Image (cartoon, rainbow, N blue to C red; front, side, top):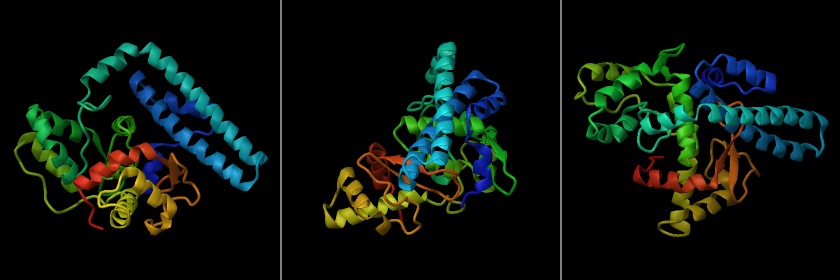
Length: 296
């Protein structure tokens, strides 16, 4: 399981405009500032959606909850104004980065890999473009040591990876889950690759745990495939999950009564605030899970 401290150090949600400005001062380059603000906007919107539900459940018009939400709303409005301003000022740099990004991405120079499986998923495409050595060097240079025995990706790469995932209609929970704790064995393998890119990746050891939300989705899919149709649609899986989320969620990460037609909220132990999962993300996730079925 990921370390709570690592995640909180990677991204602390500001409570008001002044805290936004203070965090922004520590970031030097314009593109990194834009990435930081876009991730922040995403997180603040998730938090506001959650606070609205929490406030309504407690007491409509509760002064404390309303005051807290107004502070976050002010921060979000300030963030979005800053994003618009910086995007206008640095339009050429953003366009240049987009053109240099790896196919299917808007920011990352290469796809991120954090273990054997993700490395193998991208390796053939990288080799086709004869960029394997460059990729391994980029991955290795993007990793820094955690306080314990593992490694993590630098904040700028983590932000870019999260935003590219969101752009593709995915949730960013897998990025948070995996990129903050990379095992030493994979780092050693990347060190070898810098010298000899033909070396095969390590096998059978150090694999990442499957994100819990993906397990929930896969259980709902299997249930729907036996009760509704052999190959149920994403909507049928969504409806099954919505009807009784606790049936598929033994870890109780889904927040009860948070489902609607378009989204639900879930809480992971390493995150400070609940996150939303959009209905539009389910189609892509199911396609990926069908290609690589989970063994649970």
